[in-house]
Length: 545
Image (tube, rainbow, N blue to C red; front, side, top):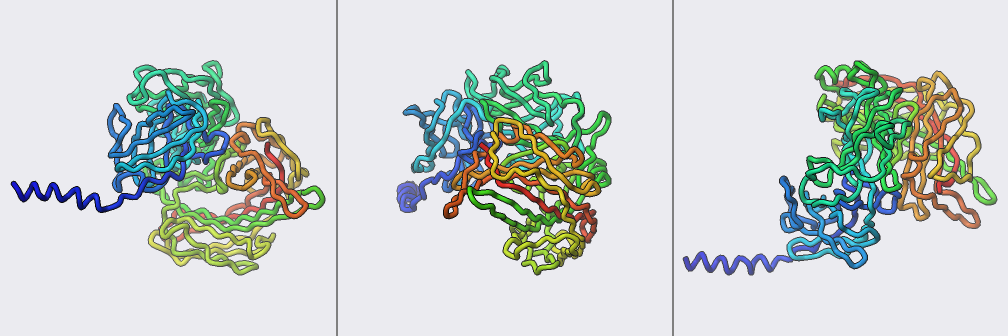
């Protein structure tokens, strides 16, 4: 008895000798959208689920609150949010050393404030937080705020390219940030409060109430902080990658996509994997697919006195393995007639990229390329910035991509001849466009035999110090020579800043246009199908304000 008591006295002394590092907070974001602080829809809404990022935030093993009611402390971790001198205490639902997910109490005041994290008796330094009434974030399959939106049918089956919605169907979009509730945030709501004025954009159709197809926008009854929006798929909408966006609290959040097919069809038809592989997934098979493409961009920007040019050349490849259960990861761009936007520079490939095709790929052509390496070993995604080589992509030149093979995909070699189309935007350089208005652009030229007679429209906006950016992309028919980009696509962008070089000032925003070359197909051991293509983009420097 004595010896055991002595050990109990000694143990705290030993533990006390070890210094536990204080928590460090490095970021705060909506748990669904992940939008960076400073972007238009990055505020943390009252009653929403938000994420805190940093180090030493909690125990080394995952700690999850599996049951309600939630409490203000989870596994020794607590948070304090202070706005205008009033403090509230978020309800953590998940804690880990690098991330905390928590519900911000609905009674938290709006405005600029601070958040701190306390763990093991130590409290972090304050970190800025902007609390707003509403700023909705869509959960997505990739957990990045991009790609396939977390949408189910009325039977709660997840929407994917092999389980599509149809025009006239009711879909349920899941997210967080519609706004505060009157009851407790610690338990599931006993009623279903319809929250505020919400507009849902499905394809190019706006839904604002039951008369237009929006049936409900409010708290889910299944989980605290979780919102659901019951919407109708409009007539005339079709595609594997149809955009869906929500405007709440005057801001448009992240933009995901849904898969829509004509009545009676369970699969969509415009995936670059092709209908044969989509049908294989739908019938219960597994699919391994590779997407290889080269990209060159030439931008013209106009200053007060002179004009300048900027060039960039890149090579990408993704090797992705899908099962019927992971079909929602098969995300490749946006369907024709629509646009998406967000914090990304590669909307055309948000795939799972999980097949190792070797340590690096080799690209040969008119100029010698450095090895195209994986994002990390075994990731299945390869990329390289080739801009330092000078102008890389040439029209009617032969390019060969080869790989020695890896753990999942064997050796391969694929060749293509590049085509640089003549499509060009009507002069836009130096112009200013309001993000709150639709933007009509026109172009000339182009090749109707490329990419099924389609063009890619895109753009980018960076703030003055280039710490915030947003990008958009549209896939539209070539033939009309004009397209109107909806304002809800532009609203998520930051206001464009400018760069000064000597006596000249140039915009940090751009609009570009191009056409994908028709793909060349290839196979390899462990691969059902691969495609290789290229795109040459030409654009102008502009301001989005």
